[in-house]
Amino acid sequence: MAGARALLRLCPLLLPQDRHGTAYEGFVTAQGRDFHIRILLPVDLQLKNARIECSWHLKKILHGYRHILKQRLHSCPDLVSFMVELKTVLEIALKNTQDLHVPRPPEYYSCLVRDLETLGWNRVAYVDTGLTTVKLKAEDSCGRQHHITLKLNAKYPTEPPGCLVDFPVPFAVSWMPQNSLIDIYNQFLAALESLKEFWDALDEIDGKTWVLEPENPTRSATTRRIAIGNNVSVNIEVDPRHPNMLPECYFLGADHGKAADSTCFSSGLRSLFQSPPETREVHYSCLLFAEVNPLRTKLNNNMHLWDPEISLLQNLRELLEIDFPSRVVLEKSDFARDCGICYAYRLDGSVPDRVCDDPRCGQPFHQACLYEWLQGLPTSRQSFNVIFGECPYCNKPMTLKSSMKKL
Image (cartoon, rainbow, N blue to C red; front, side, top):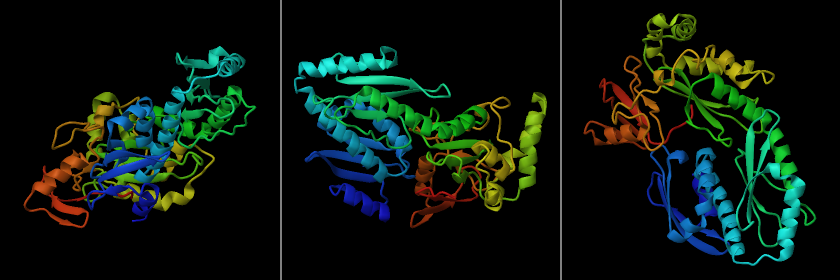
């Protein structure tokens, strides 16, 4: 409810079209102009799988910013945050679109070329033919490559250029008329170093575990869904400003069942990695029946042991008392099981993230596929946003929330 009120304050002309909050239509306002837009969300309300429809005029204005908006869809936690980003990008796009028709004075070009020469052409990745867009490249202290795109208006350097970066936090430029590109570049480098620990933590996770989602994370992505066992994973959301603190965690997998306990689960993982390849399948059978309840209990019981002096990954290992499946030992296909309804792994960018509650079955499904399946069963019933039905595979009782909650 609070999110709906915040959205209404931000975009009073953008109204919900259903009671589930999966469709919005109306207008987004920028520089006194209204642009028609329609936003369609999946049943789990995950922005990364949303579809944005807009007028041809708005589509034309935002054409050069599509990759930025796509990144923001993946990184923003909710619709309100995305609409803030969309309006910011739209303001920049409108400003630059107007500036394209404003002739640049000779001083503009001489000042820009002088700034680029002072900065060094080796730091320039791209300049458009009109000298209105400049992309600069930089390397942080760990050797990671980064880019910043500058959109310059006709009043440069009196007014600052618009800046587009792949950051998990806003990048605000401090600017005065006597400043130049070198000042923006130095602020960019300082921002890179401030995010070093955040990227270090996620790079370690990407390099040493099997990350199921996002498949190709951008530098602005703050979430990782890490494989723990067959049909069991943990989704973490890391605070970019405090990457060494305990992240938000929720588990995906079977909640109930008595086929396995936490001892079997932990020992199964360890024996799997220590065994020769020809015997791994035997040990792996223990993981087929893993459930998330023991993991959730361990996280709650060991939360006080979190140590900000050691890495995020090592903390997760110690709190959950497990070894995450190694990229050296296993293939991603060992965890990436197809949906039991559509028989595909990826569906509109999403992967199977709902698992049968009976760990002896443990069949994964796409949330959208399972929702449609349960909706079509005459024996299913719905209470508010929860559907009660049966697993398509084992016919055991199964529930589905139309909006995923973090556990």
